[in-house]
Length: 621
Image (tube, rainbow, N blue to C red; front, top):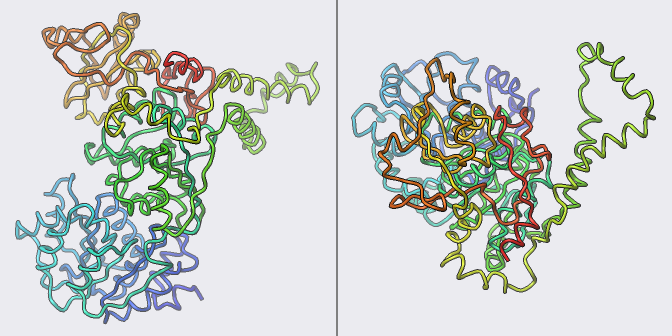
C-alpha cells in the first residue's frame, strides 16, 4: 500500500501524486497530514523551505472541501506571485483525478479582469498574494463568508515584506469559526502574534529546531577585499563547473549590473527583481527551470517561492540586511532531501555577521580560500574529461564520419590523442589564468580599511565604480526601435545587439531600456559596422531600425571624453568593463574568448575580452 494512503489520502489523489514522483511522505507531511485531515484544529507548522509544505496542506484541503459547491471554501495567502503560481499548479496536479476542482491564482502584475472572470465562474480554492487579494475584496468581487480554511504560507516572509495590515484586513472578511493553518520557516515574534490573534489553541508542529537551517546544506564563506569581490565571485563559479545556482544581491541595481556583467563575460546568467514585468519574470524563470540559465541573479523579494529542483549552490554576493533572511536564501538549495552549498562572499568586517548567522541556524560555517588560477584550470580540465567520458554517443549520426576521423588520427597512438586533446583545452585554461593573483583578503583588515575612503560610507558605490569601470574609452550612442514592451530585458537586448551586430559584449556600453525603444552605446570603432549589420534585420515580422541617438534626442546628451554625458548622469558601463581581478568566465565560456553558443542562450559574438587579473591589479596599483 502507498504510504500516503495510510495517512488518510484517498486513492485517486494518491495515484495522481504517485505519477508526480511522490513515493514516501516527507517528515512534515507525515506529521501534519493526519492532524489537518481531522479538520478540527488550528495549526502552526515550522519547517524549512523545500520540505514539502505545499503537499502537507494541499492534500488535506482536497480531502476536506466539497467540490460540488462552487464558492470559496479555502484561502491560501503567500508572499509572492511565483509562490502563488507554484502552489496553484501543485494543487491542480494533485487534483487531476478529482472532478470539479477549481483553483484560482490571484496575484499582482497580471490582468485583474481575467482573475475576476475566473472567480465569477466559480472557485473553491483561492491562492493569493495579499495586495491583489485586498484589491479584489475592496471591489466586493468575492465572498469569503463560507470559507472554512485559511492557510498562511511562509508567514514570516509576508510579515517581513510589510503585509501585516493587509493580512489583518483580509482575515477580517472570513468567518470566525474557520480553521487557520500557518506554515513558516522561522518563528519571529510577529508570527507568534498572528498565531495568538487568529488561532485558538493551535496544534504546533516543529520539524527540527526553530529557525534552524537545513541539515543537508554546507555553509561556506570567503573573505575578500571589496575591490576583488566580483573577480572572486567569478573564480568561485569557475571552480564549480557544474554549478546551477541562485546569486543573491541586496538591491535591484546591483542585481541587474552583475547579471549584465556576467552575460558580457560569457556566463549564462540573468536577473530577477521587482522592476521586471510579470511577463519578463515568467520568461526568466522559464529559462532557469529549463536550465538554459545556470546563474539566476536575484533580490530577496524576487526569489521568494522559487521552487526549482536541483539547485546546487546559493551564493550570497551580499549578506542579507535581516539575518533571518539567510535561512530563506539557503533554503533554495538542498530541497527534497538533496544536498547543497550556501556560499557567502564577505569582507573582513562581516565575519561577525557570519557568527550571528551561525548562532541563529545552529550550524558552523567553513572558511574557504579562493582557489588559485591553477586550481581552477585543474578543476575545469577534469570536469571536461568527465563530460567526455560520459557523453551520449549518437552512433547512427556520427558513424559516417568515423572512417575520416580514424584516418586523421592514424599516425597517433591512443595516449597521444588523449594527451593532445587534454592539452588543447588545458593550454587555454592555463593561458587564461596565468599570473592570476591571490584574491583572499589578508589576515588583518588593513586592506579593507585602506580602501574605505575609495568605496564610500558602506562601500557599495566605490565597489560598483571599481567593478564596472569608470567610463574609459569613447562611445557612440544609438537608438533602436525595440524596448520592454517587446518583452526585452537589458540582458536580452545585450544579446540581441551582439548577435545581430556581430560584435563582442565588451564593445557594448550602457543600455538604457525604455518602453518602445532603447538607447545603447558601442565603441566608436564598431559604430559603422553595427549600422551595416542591422540592415534588413527583423523582429517578430517588423523591421528593426537603429539610428544615431543624436538624431533622436537633438544632441542633448552629447558624449563627453570618458563616455559619460554632459548634464546627463553617470555612466554605469564603461569601455570594455574592465573590472578588478577580471579573470573571465570558466564554467560557461570557451577560454578562446568566445561564448559557447550552445550554452549562451543563442547569443553569438558576445564573449568577454581577456583582461587578466594580474594585469588589472597592476593597473590599479
